[in-house]
Image (cartoon, rainbow, N blue to C red):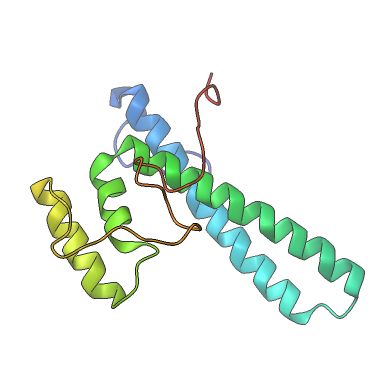
Length: 137
């Protein structure tokens, strides 16, 4: 991808904005890799090769999730919108619309209740990925 993620002169952008752009580029690349693995796996007939590709796909999902969590932590409104949209029962579009509106107002989505099962975030502002402390130099 090179430096195509910048739409403004990089030298004029803050380090925070450049890091944000890099993470967005990483997220895009992980999503593309997930799509490529899905296609390859759907056609692979050798069980050993397929198992290796499935393992690799799991790594891509992990990286995608970690990058997404980083972006949510960096952009609180994104995180708030995500918490009101992801892992919730009901209509996805309605949940997203309510979450977006609430993020704009700074409050919780109207009528929202936190997810109740153990596989969903704990309400600590995280989406359950874990700490990114110490991961950046």
